Length: 140
Image 1: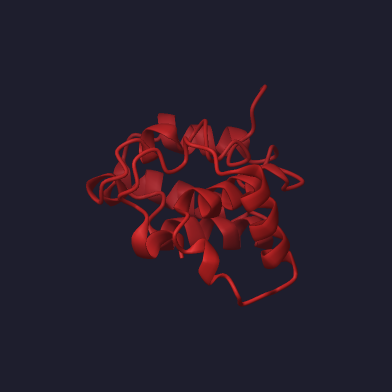
Image 2 (image 1 turned 45 degrees about the vertical axis):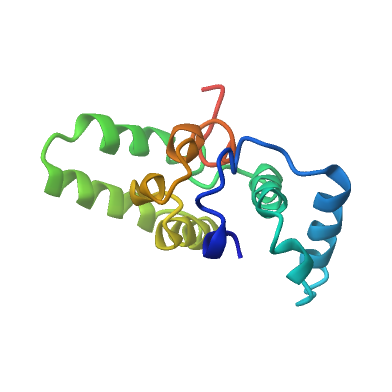
């Protein structure tokens, strides 16, 4: 729903959806309803529900426990093959739910540079701070 038509929407993760619309969408999703057509025309509601879901997770997707390993792999491993292997190894240590969520983000393209070329100019810039505060630990 979000990727099908909305990646060109400027400020997709920056602009908030209306509170009542967001509550209604979250309620529909929680109940397992398939009647979501009314939200297709409001990408900000869908992005808002995604942000809310991530904020409400019991721990960041990339976990407090593995934070140092993520930083080490991303910053200190110089050889690209070794870096990729280190990232794969760290992914393999994630709890299954976190792994599944992270995998979804990568597969859908929300974490790929191509997302910028599809028009949502602020998407990659805002990912670490705006839509995904639960993606990585803060306050460390």
